[in-house]
Length: 433
Ligand SMILES: *Cc1c(COP(=O)(O)O)cnc(C)c1O
Image 1 (cartoon, rainbow, N blue to C red):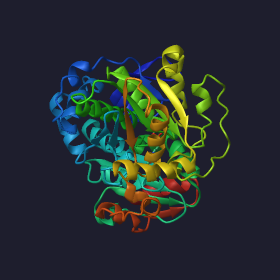
Image 2 (cartoon, rainbow, N blue to C red; image 1 turned 120 degrees about the vertical axis):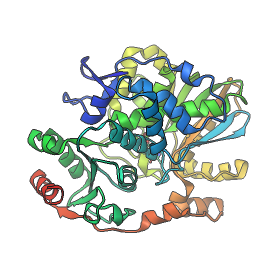
Image 3 (tube, helix red, strand yellow; image 1 turned 90 degrees about the vertical axis):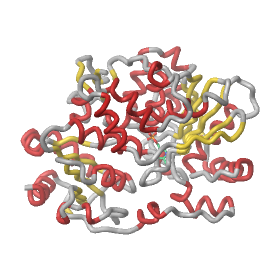
């Protein structure tokens, strides 16, 4: 599969797209054309392991760069966790994506990117990423001990949690956490400037594992196919996925799964009240709010989605088709709380608030209406990540898995720097030579 920028038509390989991160024209990489992959997944039986599915599909992304044996090796080394599909009733299922090391679906994209980079990279590489909350942990876990790769994680001011210090460079590992005295945007700005500083970028062979990297974003399509394989025997209807959206990477990955040939009726774009982007789906002008409103699903408090140009490119190609493919829904905090409660009462399932937004949107659009569709709501976060919230609403004790309990431990960064590129480059030279 070849990739092009949302702003031009010259193409690059998957390998080049991952190693560059973003095209130099400021756009985002998207597939230049999408192969029909039905032959690889349509007839897989419901006992298929996630790694088998990934090994079968990923060689099509990587044509030429990786052979089927290497693809299997990548899948095995990326995933020691799987998505989980649970059918709740005749019309409704949940796709649980929170069994990875940090309990959020982002673990899936990050794990694949780390494994594929290790496979494709010849020579040394340094992966720079601005991170907050548990994304840094996900990166540190996925990149730990990857040969010839160093992972530099830039954190904004505040406590740094959940890292395993034995993986840090000074302890013989390959992880370098650096704290920037500033906010998350300062960290992102430093990553961008470092990638554009030719001398520095070439010296260390820099790439980024940020959320828009195609190596992280596109492999999220795999779990939509997986849900289909698991469910197809039991259901006669077309699938509709309800996706809790913030930067819209997850939803757009679903749209690519559809392009790969997944039989799907549509996608619900479930948003909290930060729904500026909803106007876009209705064909109105997109006027993003300037600052997000804080909600009880904070990972979705986004006004200007970083994947905006990817979504735009879909609509540019075929606006009429897209109108029947993506259904926007907005769920407020009160409804989120009610849904956490009703999902427990009705299905005995514990929902994280982000997942509850997807559930609520699915119920609003589908439940009780016979529209010939089976809805799959994506559960993107582990209920234990919002244990107090979920416990208060459901009255249940929420068991916290050991790996998630460890996310609370604080650790010290290797360096603390002012929010400037020079300071960052000196810090790297001091630890990485
Ligand atoms: C990041 C995140 C989202 C939003 O996903 P996008 O791909 O940015 O739309 C939803 N739920 C949880 C738990 C998240 O961490």
